[in-house]
Amino acid sequence: MKATIGSLMGFVEAMGSGVLPVFQWTTLSVVRVLGQRAYGAEIRRALSAELGRDVAIGQVFACLARLEQAGLIEAVDDSEEDRASRRRRLFHLTSAGLEALERTAFTARAFANYRRDKELEA
Image (tube, rainbow, N blue to C red; front, side):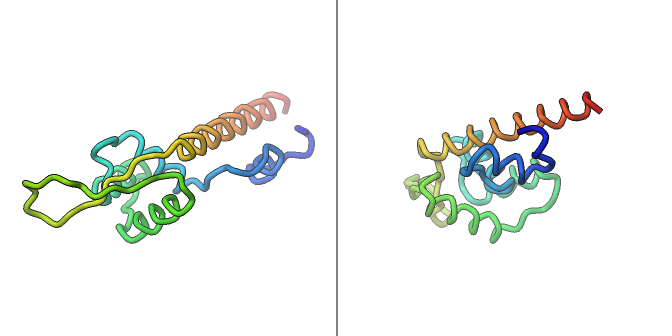
């Protein structure tokens, strides 16, 4: 197996499907870390900090919609009655989202170990 895998995509194919793209994985990670503060604007701020670049709010909501459609997150309306601003949607991981997050992290670690081993062989 090691001799035929030369790239991340080849490695992912060999490991099987179900690995998330980087932006989706990072978004899921941020939602998990933020917990009860996981709403659009806060997710955007955390993603921008994590990725080291400005992330457009439209990109965030498009990604959240894809993750929700895939069943990896769920959204609920914030029910704080004392809020003067408009309602916001809070996001949280589903059990499938947690599994996808862990599967992608495992694959990334396995690929890093594979690359390290290849460099040591050289």
